[in-house]
Image 1 (tube, rainbow, N blue to C red):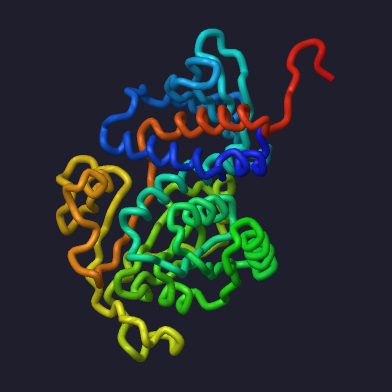
Image 2: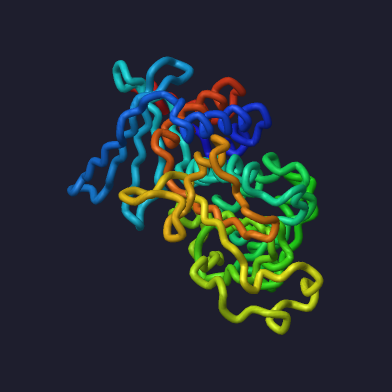
Length: 336
């Protein structure tokens, strides 16, 4: 059984994370394994729902993940990994922590392609599970990062988060109470769920906005009280008078050219038009550039990538088993 701390220990490993970046890249380019669809099973008598994932290769052979989401007044969601041959239970994982890493790793790969050159300052909006995994992934994906400004709704929680993040990463991490100044001064801005909205027009020219709100599912994946970015607000209320004094020297994004990039191609219409985001795969494959000029702001929208959920669960549990991370659970009549 893997707790949230166990999941962090399993995923926050340099070699393991690079392998998962490769998994995501293969899926984006269509070179990954052919995985079947996920199946939703409703349990009306218990008001619970199961999501059964496709089969994937694991440390013990072919296996599949089952996600159990209980009622809001019951325990948090969990993910079970089962052997495909006979349904034997291989592992039980905290779904909140797993969701955070599942969303953060594709964002880390995207950051390598979309971030401005040598970014040093990360503006992190959120203090939940998704924010924690996003920070650890971006710390690895962008080695030039040296400072993090954390914005959260609860000052005590944000200070605890910043202290833990500084110890874990070795970066300079401080709490900011000014969402606008944080967004305007950062090279990379990452938001992981909640409210109130942060106006994207505050971003500096050339910055990267990583919008993880689509992959965060509060309360399991993030704190619903944490701020997010309102990507609909480009183009209003900008100019020198609107910029914070400490960021006035940076290039203003008063009338920015915004390049919208998504984790997957939008369905039903052609991608890359002014109305539609550009699929990340086009940039990864070298068929498109993230920016037309250095002043362009890139808005990356995270989301679900077909097949990635089961690969992340299987790989994470397998790596934890190899490192002897987790709590052994005995099943059967001899169990305590």
